[in-house]
Image 1 (cartoon, rainbow, N blue to C red):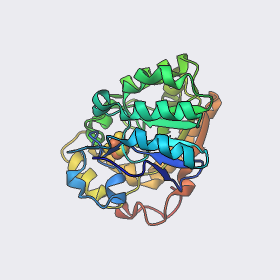
Image 2: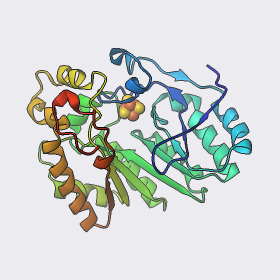
Image 3: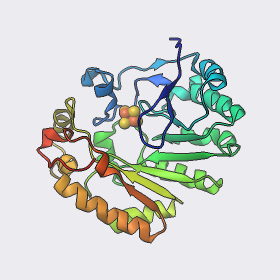
Image 4: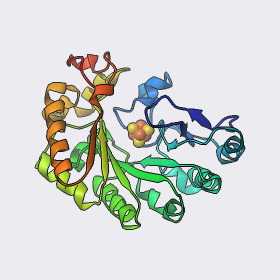
Length: 275
Ligand code: SF4
């Protein structure tokens, strides 16, 4: 498809615009909040992606007219899901933003991101990050079935940091601890990967998320532990401990629980505090 606008004013704190090169996401994370934002059937999420073919050209026009501001890539899709390997919409938009000298913040779950290291390193203002909400790849395989494995994301973070970039991790939505992972070992893994900043938030449990998670976990050996992803009495103290361990290792850890909308998590009967 073609689009008329590409940079969207974004209400998220610290962001001026969002840029989403695709509609939909083949990673198909069970907890994804985008189906709710787009009023889409959650059962269809992850089954198709629409390519915004002219998006970079539109960005080139918009940066001439709009006030300069931080562009978040992306907020409603993964900019490096496998279709980006073919269509290169994210790369072309980055080229435009680089020429215009606009600041960017890039977030993905996919190590294809390292393809664009040559561009990232030329930006004056840039942050690059990976979503890594668990270190347990068995948990990832259940709730982010088509997204790249955790090890690949940690290697990608290391490669980005080794290129001199400031890297961050979205520990969001924070999974409960599973397997051998403890707050100490989680923080140590991120520190080893050269991570400088982290943010976290709790699950947004609206729009059929609890039911979708329950279906996905049915019969799994991790079901009992992972079901607590929506239980703030489990998640809040765990995340606080992860934060302490991260800060002790020099990682700037931000707990965004206070941003959570009061009605979210209602499906799990959790307390109305924090995001
Ligand atoms: S990678 Fe992001 S946008 Fe894609 S399904 Fe997962 S949470 Fe949603």
